[in-house]
Length: 315
Image (cartoon, rainbow, N blue to C red; front, side, top):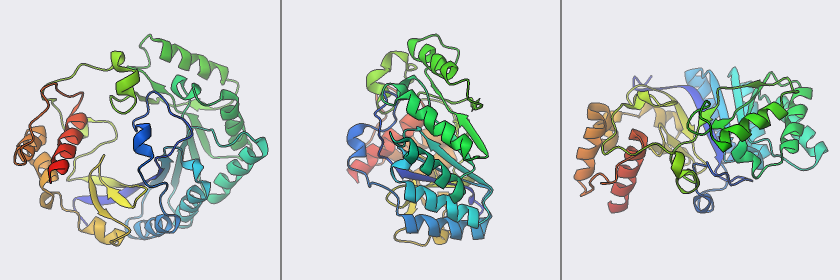
């Protein structure tokens, strides 16, 4: 076993494609068009089987983009996870699967049959600009009728849930409109200062800091890069341990070999972060003539991604 990486959780970014273009989306529309359409179904199943056999993973998640633009891939991943004994099998979706009610019911039944046992539906003012609420309602009702184990609304809040702004007020109104359905509301998440938000929601974003302070583990959904407990599979087969931090490609190398060979001290940029945080990353970037942006950054993640992208452009 690798002392730096074990796979308790396995995530699949099924696709970057989406049937919406929300103002808070982390991925720009032009970026979606140049990325691979979806993860390979057979490769995904192979990864699930091999990883679960070796590491006894506790959960998997399929998300996107909108993963149900490619339902057969989603079914295959959850079926492989169920067969492999992975107990937690979650899907994140915007609930916009079809305009046809019979097709919506078919998808819901197929999800449950395949093995998905938890569905989070992203519903808020941002999605509602592009996605009819009544179709989302139909998807939720179909899941309830199919007897999914757990379903929840997963709103995205602007600044914070308590912040008074038109977007949050609309989100609360939408959730109230859907309150007749027996579905819990999760704590949700918050708009991140990236992607479309930089263009549409800039007035609500936090101020930039010259050199942000903090560690990876201070960020939601992140953890120390020398103590990683989950991996993400990208549509092109890249295996990542954090946002834009690939450690191999499962199309080229066996997934178990990728995981077992992960050593943060053998990857210069990761070593720099592990040993000295953002100051270490700055020193690493300077070796390539890259200096921190004088305008500052929204967070350590913003800074980390920006510096690594600029270095990669010079390599």
